[in-house]
Image (cartoon, rainbow, N blue to C red):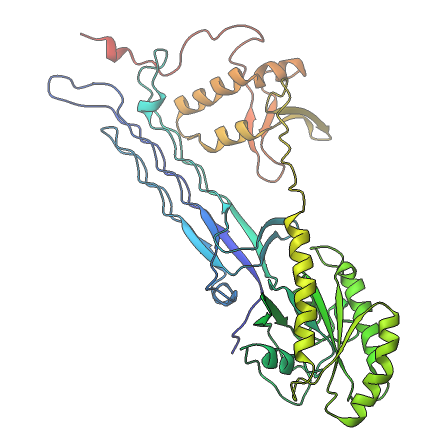
Length: 458
């Protein structure tokens, strides 16, 4: 049975907005008192919140479909619909949110961080909100907008100060068990560690966290063995500790070749949090309680120091050399924390829209089937979604909005004629109109739509 999951694909949907209401007030001796339809409620959002008590994405592995509540429709007597309930998804610290193309949407590192991953649709306006001096009795209301729906990838990357890296059975689990209160599974076969283990280590006045992650083999950066499951949890760590097995009996393996193989995989992987080659290293030559291993450690230690490594000879089983290793880790952790504290905070650059940005574009398209005009833009497409095309007055209101925005003038400028095919929206989901101009370019509207002369009757 799966007990730890660090990568899931989640299908989320925000709530749809409720439809506005088209209603007319009716009272005694005043049968037509004016529009009183309420607005629809907004749909609920989908929010991700970092919770330190959550350690895995297992919940979303078993339930990958999540949807917020829909807004309620408006009602008569100016009663607005209720807002849909938000849905809060709690994730562990270190969760990276990506879309299906790999683009990072949010990087949720610390407890309390929160982001809205899908926004609920706006509720439609009722006819009371649509009334004006020019349109006194609208016989229509706007539809609620659909909420955002998307697929996201949640990827957990362990947040720790130090990462223990090494081949399977190098003694990483024994080391973290000896230095902290962590109790990982320890056995004499490869890939005993299948999930990251975190331990808290104290060295003098410094308290830091150490991660024991699944073992590494050549080709891990391409996904071999536990591959990416290992390397993903190394990215956020400030310090890397190579745990090298000096007592291995595998042919062709020795501490130097193990170190080179691990370094090659770290170089190939890189990671989204920066180049792993830049992280400070410590080499822990393990299992020196075995006489042959101690001889080998004494032999290779000078060679490693010549390469610039800090080398500590240890035995995780006999607890030999653990105190010097702990202080060596603490020193590098303190350096990393000081560097993080002095980093310059990136400025937020605000890029305002150009003053001549109309918010829409009209493109003339021509092929063997004829000439058509495609309108793109957030506002025109949103207005189309809000329109009830079964109501002629609502369609007329849409035409007025498009005319005020300048769409009709642009169509005339591009040579569109009455009856021309006009599409609003993307290629795969556009609304098609046979265009009938309501105004000539530059001329005012001839009169309001939606007037009801019954309001003026005695």
